[in-house]
Image (cartoon, rainbow, N blue to C red; front, side, top):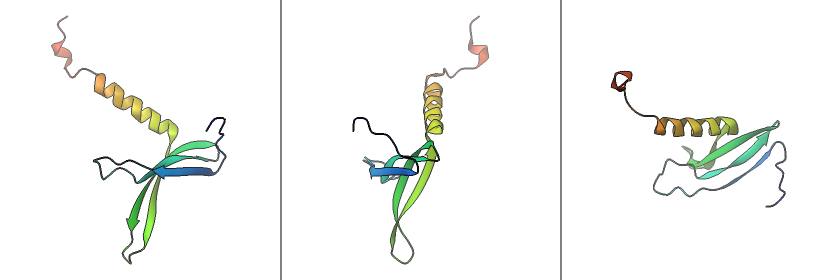
Length: 87
């Protein structure tokens, strides 16, 4: 949606394509809470008495971005000890 501005204390969840990974959330989306953007994840669960509910997790978007950068850095760092350097 062009020109969409996230309103404070609101968010939206969408059905997530889990692919072959059943541990991925059933729903994902974004929310703004007190001016801070969060990444939302939700899992559809069933309680002991048989009622369905949505379990939620909120992660600040800056942490999500930092984690992604750290994973990329970790993936491209060479795996060798300092003694392996030939100079």
